[in-house]
Image 1 (cartoon, rainbow, N blue to C red):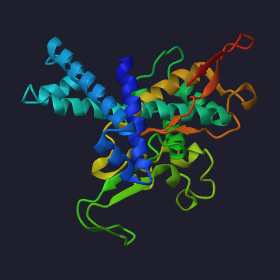
Image 2: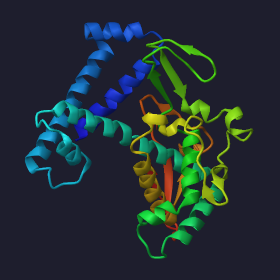
Image 3: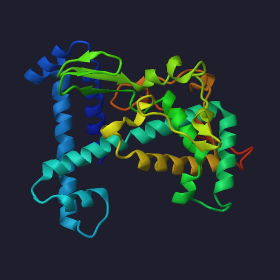
Image 4: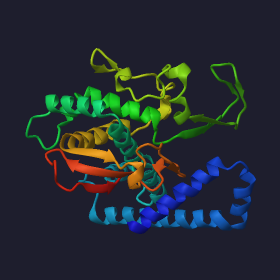
Length: 309
């Protein structure tokens, strides 16, 4: 699995390089000649495919009819037992959509939380109000009641979306809502990171972390997905959206309630006063990780533990 993860990360990084290349002819020529980064990409994809097929083989060997994990459910829906390519694509799609995006969103969330102790206090107040005092984990209904946490997650991803830009290709000649004509085959790219910082969309405080902008009378109030395309919109909306939000709420409720997570200041080798630097990839990840100091809330004089998210 470590080989799988390394190959997956390399394939993601090289694919992202393709998307940002100013001269696509360069990587297309490398692909044709099987040289340089394109050769590395092919090798990485080959290893990902190989290990995905092995995962399918193992699941088929163990039996899937009585299991309820995602892969087993998809395997039960396939009529042809030999249709491994479809199942392989399903595995890779779920990994690509969910493996790094939640980690990226949580890393940036704790980065912002370290800078805004008032938001952290408000989150703790809500968690203490919704969850039972001695509860280790929250129930599904309790997670749904965490309206302020929900707003803080959305606000964090407005500023630091896990997927910073995305593209669509036009199947037929069309006209965009602003009157722009788009020809068939045209690639149209939108930049969620930039859109989250547009004053005409979010107001004069667009660069500020303000979870309350998502609340109406204490309840979460979503914006149009075309204004906030973090989860895409329309028929292409993210299938794992609700699961991802529940995962993030679960982690936040468990960590924030018990720990203080502080970004290590610049003079300690961290970057508290510096904006995060992103590493190239299909999913936004922080270059070098995020150095933090973790303290249990009951601890006052104990030596803090250091982590890199």
